[in-house]
View (cartoon, one colour):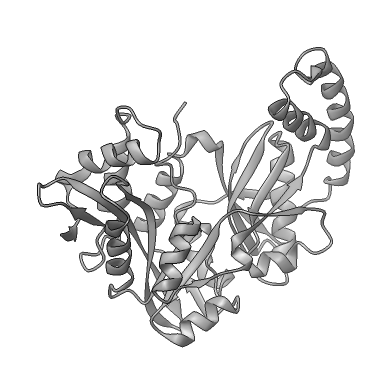
Length: 357
């Protein structure tokens, strides 16, 4: 039987998720409350679009799908988006329960359904049910900010006996210091960014996304919940939510990312006008360099792909980004890149699968 998730299911969902996704054993104490926070205590929780469970005849749960609601506007018309996240099914029971949950989810009243980084099995289910692959958004870009340190870390992780972990560390630090001086000099003219609070986020978002047919809309309650929830993914690094202004002190764009000193920083959202997104990326790179990041990675969204032109980066496939739209015109706009749908609207950044320090 498929039904809506309730608070009484959270413990069973955490047990199922821990066993199937997180490697088994007892779930950590924070996992069930985190599910409550992200799917039940959501400020835009919609009883028409609940998270779903598959209940067996004995009352046990064999599958779960988290549903995360977002509000968008399509040429001024309000749109409901539902992101499917944390789909998990007990393999002992079989894959049918997961497919039934996915079918029930995609049959809901939402205008658009999305998921980020789907597995091949999830892609097969989505496409079978009419979903489409967002090809560009299924690729990530990676920019190396400190080549020496990033390369040494890669070698150390793949071949622990290489001496970069012992005496070679002095050489790495010396070369990295030299490189840091060079890149700080080149970044001296980079635009600056300032902390972005929820009130400003809500007010500037419509002006930054107005040139696209489809874009997210936030209110202050949702923005507070979103930023607070983003901060719970502490294993990813320091959350940085920043506003970039142009020379006339007008908003040029914003970025949201996790800054990880000595590691790869993950970009969650880059938003800006087409003529200023390059400036926003410059400010992002400068902020990451200042914080000691070795590299930075983000999703190759259509607007970002154009703004990255001329910069050195590598590409890698990171999982399928999928969309399912009831309205054919909505679907075409998304696939054509005429929409602001960053990772903020998806489930990529959520911390259900992460370990907490």
